[in-house]
Image (cartoon, rainbow, N blue to C red):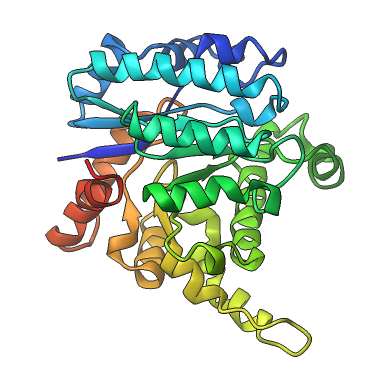
Amino acid sequence: MIIALEEHYVDPEVARHFKEGGPEARDAALRERLHDVGALRIREMDEVGIDIQVLSHSAPATQRLDADTAPAVARAANDRLRETVRASNGRFEAFATLPSANPRAAADELERAVTELGFKGAMIHGLTNGKFIDAREFWPIFERAQALDVPIYIHPAVPHPAVVEAYYRDYLKDFPGLLTAAWGFTVETATQGIRLVLSGVFEQYPALKIILGHLGESLPFSAWRIDMALARQGNRKSAFRDTFRNHFWITTSGNFSTPALLCSLLEMGADRILFSVDYPFVPNPPGVRWMADLPVSPEDREKILSGNAKRLLKI
């Protein structure tokens, strides 16, 4: 069985709140696949043997909406997504979109999505109106996630404008991908992962579960060095590496690198890695073919392809 759990779609009513176009606005085939949650998507799953996609709204989602607007927009989008899941005859599951600018409403919407709609957790895209999600004002979301025993998937979005100006502006004309999946997404989301560990949220909520995509946004490669540097004089005591390995799961979304996966296996263990494609930004066939040829045991391959997702998401 193959379960893919960072697979995106676009809700037209959410999308209309954003004037700027992302990659889907420039690419007709990508736009078609983001809006399709029916025959085309299922056919492309069937062609490679993907049994279940866990659907999540593409960035930008409701993290970019204000505290008054976001709750109703998120609620309606989640209701529509529930109907999509219901109509799929078991081919789709879902992560909720949350109105994170209104943390109390976001926590309540997470509970509704899990207990009433049957969703498997939630996905949060990047900054919430310029703020990292580790800020204490957002902790009600994590408190509720722990109580519900569901994970929060921290997904990239476009970096803060000040970071764009300082780090990337010089090269964006010729290399627009540098801002997003080539590097900007990784830096922004890895920073969010580090901030979550250092914030103390896992001490407050010791059963909290976080998912990062793209093989952990480079953090498995860097965990030892981060841990070592934070142990130097002048730093408050932090068990960074242990906390990261105990509270985070990572997915293969859009990062079909055998060396990177083997590093992740050594650092995280096979129980912490889940298969994802990042459809439709990445096509299905390369990811499934890559998994078939990995130099891992049949038991570990089964865990990555579906076993870990079944346990984490209770599928």
